[in-house]
Length: 386
Image 1 (cartoon, rainbow, N blue to C red):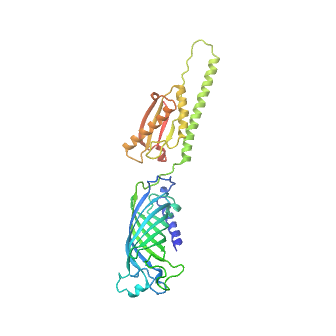
Image 2 (image 1 turned 180 degrees about the vertical axis):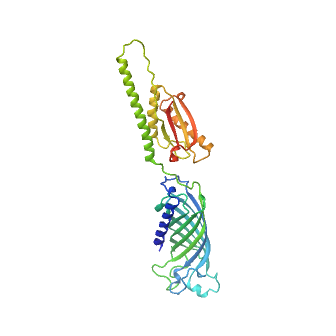
Image 3 (image 1 turned 45 degrees about the vertical axis):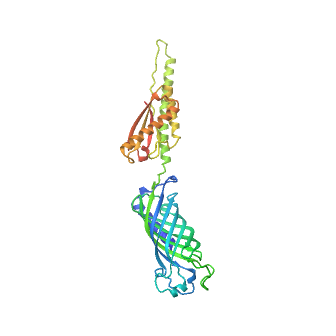
């Protein structure tokens, strides 16, 4: 039933994303350890089943008064990828000891009440992101999980080990908050209900365990960075850099042909007067790319093109202009102006390391722009011969 529900849910989510926000799905880069943490708090309704009730023909409905009680749960967790996360979850603290002899003697609803807590470590699988692609605006996320932990019956002073599984549904309210609906099942050793296995005759046997079914409703609060960085389109960046290299090579070839013609003319001309040849070098700007909000060069490979241009400038005594840009779609105008200045200064420092005099470098901050498409290509600095 769970697998069938998962199949229908994933199909529905895929159709929803294709018709509403398909442009929001993209590949992501792994974030730092401190990113994508979350905390949760829930109101819990739990139904308890004891192995000691076997053979007493008690009602199995999870809504029976002698089975159910309200409690709460809190959890902290982290998403390591959009599809895989870990969660540490505490659950308690009011439960039921469903023991057949107690049921026969009980006169009031609270006769079999007890106190307990459980602590579980669970692995979360966000099938919405795994099967439909990551989307930072998706409203509903379907998240099965499984784990293991320890429980204690405080009323009876007993401990038990157990396994847990369930389905966590989150409904996005904002970048920070989400609504939870958690359906959980846990299977425990026979001491979880406070009664030692076999203490009640004919009520335990091979394979019998204490069990809990829970429905939880609450909130998730996302800590720190909540979204995932988009992986740069490497092929597009390579194509853009390659086109600049091709343009530079073509211009260099034209300059070499012109020099060859001039040398041939001088060789065949009588030395009547001294001739001075002034050569003007024109080269296409070379781009160096940056990640969003950063002034550290994303790939050192971009500096190879800058180095080639620096050698041309040094050989001809030309000046270089370094222009920094930022993506106008992210950040304020003031922030982008400062960021573009830092990016230009970073590339200028690299030129100095390549042997270019600082006096021959002009730094320009262009601020936030939207001249290239996609907009991520505007996160760059260009180097050109003046």
